[in-house]
Length: 104
Image 1 (tube, helix red, strand yellow):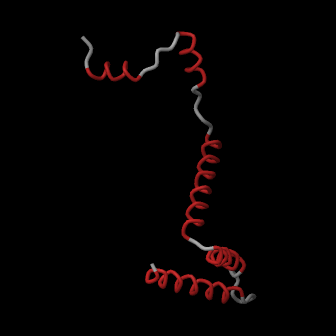
Image 2 (cartoon, rainbow, N blue to C red; image 1 turned 60 degrees about the vertical axis):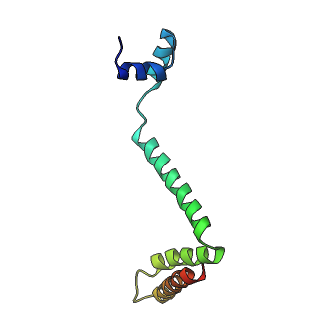
Image 3 (cartoon, helix red, strand yellow; image 1 turned 90 degrees about the vertical axis):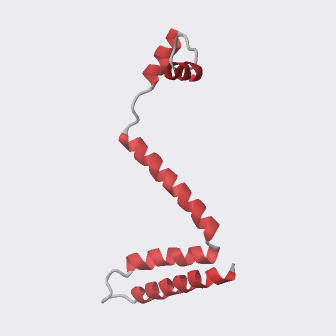
């Protein structure tokens, strides 16, 4: 008589011919690290895009993109004024997040 684990395995296993089992085992090669990394980056990109479109208006998205651009450009605060724009956009985003809690 079979125990429960064998019954469970037999119930969910597919009835494959020996030739087909051999083909399936050959096709189960490990996925290369680069492909896994690319897949995870694409998945992250998709989730980020969904989150941004769900929670931000087009104007809010432009503020976030402006934060990214001016954050990168304004690294040298002695030679540019872009860090001031960055701080202004950051304050604008912070105030809009605080006020959005009261609107809904």
